[in-house]
View 1 (tube, rainbow, N blue to C red):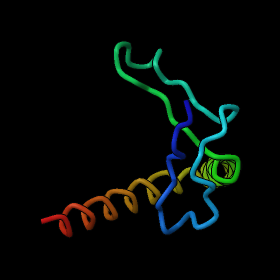
View 2: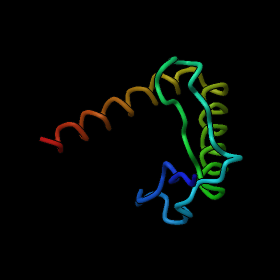
View 3: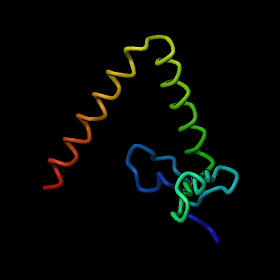
View 4: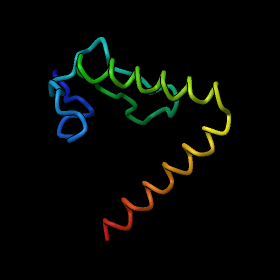
Amino acid sequence: MTHICRNYGDPDAPECLRDSDPQYTMDFTDVEPGVSGYIHWCSKCDPLEQRILKAIMGAAEADPSFVVRFGAAIAVQEAVRKAGAH
């Protein structure tokens, strides 16, 4: 069974290949038993996500205040998203 990449259709991921690559499937079913916890990525998107995560972790290690600023930015983005949904 072929799964669709998590980023498919995202305008920020124009190089997405649509069909996921099984080697990049992440299994989180042990985190919340009984809930489907798989995230499927294609071979273009997962390596990009890993580089982004590495950059975020590196910034947090270099400057602990980054975590607070990053969290605030995410909260603002989520509030804007929710406000636009109404």
